[in-house]
Length: 149
Image (cartoon, rainbow, N blue to C red; front, side, top):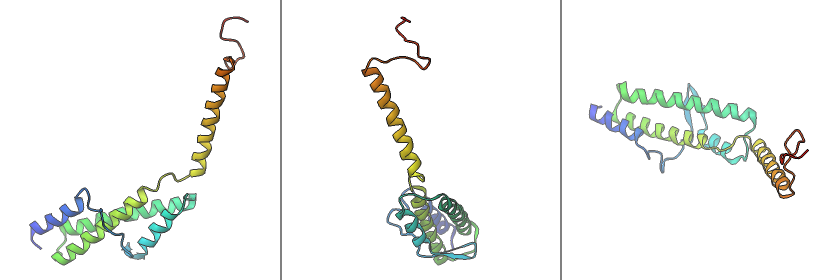
């Protein structure tokens, strides 16, 4: 592969919108193990919340995907590869990036805790409003702020 071809391939994976329209690979080999990547990503994204045990699995998958991406990029940068192999590596890297984007944008991982915190904050605001509306502006020690005992 010529040096200018190598630079073109590297530019493609570094491009801002490289993952737009890209598909997540059906399967990918990572660290010698074949993973059904598309199924894994869609399974995780289908859930409304991610249980604690699954969060660890997702984080581990993201770490492994980042490592595999880095290794494939290094093969393009430094490896003695053909243009065709470089194209396959670019396609795989863009697919990995697409999967990583999907896994990074899962949203809140503990929806129940977030809902509970929101309800607690809402109750506190409501109680403060009622106290002000009813003229009960005593502080936590029970003394009246207007100065009279």
